[in-house]
Image 1 (cartoon, rainbow, N blue to C red):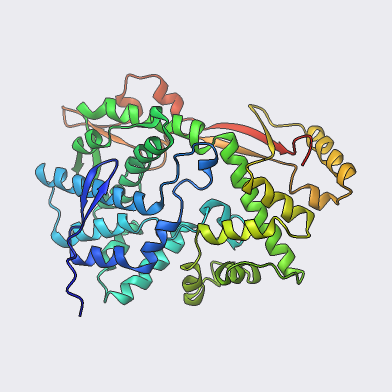
Image 2 (cartoon, rainbow, N blue to C red):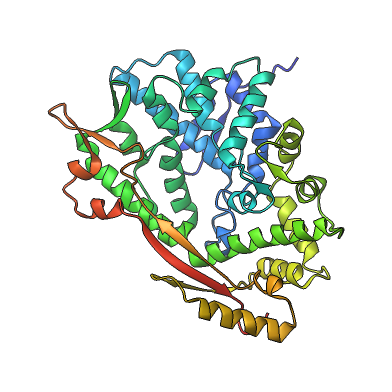
Length: 409
């Protein structure tokens, strides 16, 4: 039996030293399911825009756990009762909240896996680990699913001001170098409280919340919805779709066994069984990147060109507008491509397409952020704030984009 010291310390560039609180959490971090997150980029292909954005979901999961430790300490200090098993449940739930992300996760969710979100896969991983760890994750799963009766605990995992967002905004800002997204997560956590088992922010933390929401808006427009990152993600989605289409026609594409499984099989919520989960746990960014390096030399015009664009960062051109783009523009670009390369409309649609993006920094109707006033009253942040722009931040802003090849592919 291993006598390994399980009270390890990680040196994190954002928060400094992060301590693993107990042996169960150490064993979960050591598990192959969690170690896979070292090979899953936190921001997909955003490093094509921001060269420093190479941090992983492993970094983010540990950072979120650290912030949860701080939040528990603050709430206890303010007299909020949190039992030892509840503390453990909170730490495990936040540690594993992203364990179901696949390589370039959102691209994968829209191509080779149908109608199965990363949250659902995270839950399946947690249930599998719960069996392996003799029911030790039961409370964490209840909190993760939002079923635990103490609502503030569920809100710490998933809400509009949860520990997930508190970490990724600060972390992504740091690694991209986009200073506008740098939030004071420690200050926010210090202002946390719970009233009637609901999460609130004390009135003196109102400016920190305002900064948090504004930073979130900036990060979405400047980073998460950056036009180059958007094109790259769309291209990966189309690479996987095209590969799956070719495999279904009997073509043999060289790739890892794990990726091959998802190309050969129709995977959806009902067919995502234990075997599928096991194969999924072997899939990471390296499978996709190495496959694209191989496929850029494929005979298929669509697949080879899409892969070459990503590997060599010679992407499609993108036009973003505030109003829907006219179909005539799309048709003109598509016809030019068809005539130049003598390809079909179906093939041309892989290179010429349109879509829309939406940014809503604050969703007032979804688990609103409540401010605890000095009088004891509780108000929504928009009503409690004297900043007029917060009301504007609660309205969705939609933009429309069109992608098409540059003059020469």
